[in-house]
Amino acid sequence: MAQNVAMAVTIKKAAPVATKQTSVADTGASLVPTVISLVSGVKQLTQQQKALTAECIPSSAEINFVNNTVKEWAKTGAKTADEVQASLGMKRCTTATGGYQSTIRIAEGTDEKDLICYDWFGGSGNDGMVWEKFPMAVSTYYCTDGSLTGCSDKNKQYVSNIYDVFNLIDFDTADYTQQEAKMAGTLISKIENCSYAKLNAKKKALWGEFLIDTVGGLGQKTNTATIMQTVSGVANSGGMGALQSLGSIATQFMQ
Image 1: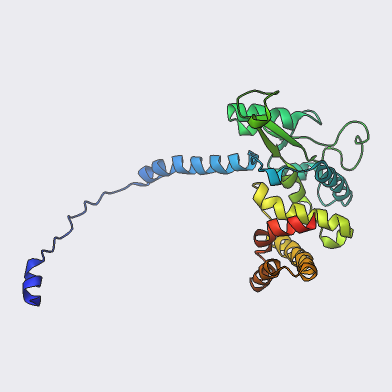
Image 2 (image 1 turned 60 degrees about the horizontal axis):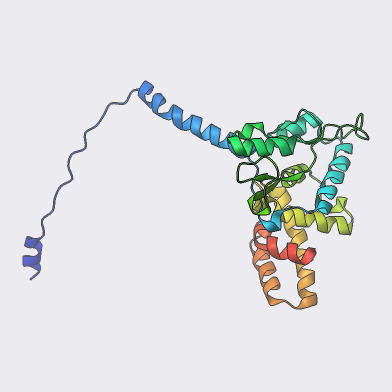
């Protein structure tokens, strides 16, 4: 039977593959559009503002906290206003306030993301201060129906640069009061979920431990098995995945 089956199977050889001599010029010509596409994609990503879901829309208290923290950070001299501008990958608006909102709405209507700029500290109370021209956190919306203003709530899409701005600040938990640290922890846990900003490894580890400790204490109080299980999982992973794993739980119990 094995012999009959073997005789019944017909093996077809693959058709010969024709080789083509490719010159360096041909290779370069074929790669250029890809490289241009990649560069454009990266550039657009740095300019684009992520549309916010309901849990990501910042409160006025969060906006005020970040703007006050920016001023304190500016006092340390860690970076100049121009260095911060380079770090953000976005330019300052022509005027101190109102530019972010207007350029967001124009950019979304025209798909010209390079237009988006950020508001900055200027004018009364800011001129001549060390934080002058540093970025301000702003929350606004654009209209999905094409209107520049005055659209109904169902057509409003909220955006904010709060997470991009706060991600620039390199304070650690020791630099905040206990209450401030809770607010900072809440914002840190939202950064990667609510914006295109990324936390560096040092910040992830530092704030990951803070969130573990905070949620761990709450878990002991409430005896919530789900929370402690999450904390255990993060601890076993070395804490680097803390923000992804604990984000929503930490935020819920810290507020």
